[in-house]
Amino acid sequence: MTEKIVQTAGRNQLGKFAPMFAHLNDDVLFGEVWNEEAIDVKTKCIITVVSLMASGITDSSLTYHLQNAKAHGVTKEEIAAIITHATMYVGWPKGWAVFRLAKEVWEEEVPELTEKDRYQNSIVFPIGDANPYGQVFVGQSYLAPVSTEQVPVFNVTFEPGCRNNWHIHHAKSGGGQMLLCIGGRGYYQEWGKEAVEMTPGKVINIPAEVKHWHGAAPDSWFSHLAIEVAGEEASNEWLEAVSDEDYGKLK
Image (cartoon, rainbow, N blue to C red):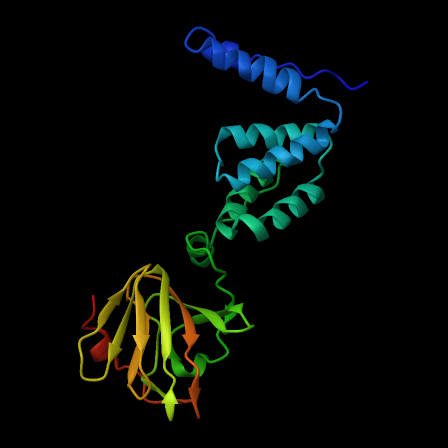
């Protein structure tokens, strides 16, 4: 028979202020649910960690349940696999947040986050790897496929100051591109027009045969989803880089 779980935190902290809540916490949740024998305690620890992670809770309560999981036999390798698996369903930023707490609980040194890591934690879609089309960009950019079926969708991320060259999406009919801004701050500009600021939630529709560029603001990372619009005899023509003088006019 496993050791009975006993909890007194509810009464210790809220016994006088909220006696019913204290009773439900100590006697029902931990007294009955946690001691129910159909599921072993280790499995309950794992379920609780994933439930809190999915809810976006990364405060001391999650630290407690991570410690509880470790105390009931969840190994470092197991918790790493559990968080990785759950991240695929609940979101990348939540995974990063829980990993930082888990590494402290399993007594691993937490490495200093890079600027790329910090920015990754602020957006939903992965940044990906260095952009293989970097030769037509000024600065460092990254590319990550979001969908490769039906309608191809790619996340393009620009480091501060990075932008692509002037270019044109050609098509005999249809064609063009859509940009869905998802993080940071950037700019889109058509030839002969003022630049348009892009922030999360903004959608840019780019018709075929329009010369344009897009990229990050000088002081911010920036990401957008790029969606190629189907067209007849569609192609892309890359042109000259955006000059430092013109780009320097942006704020």
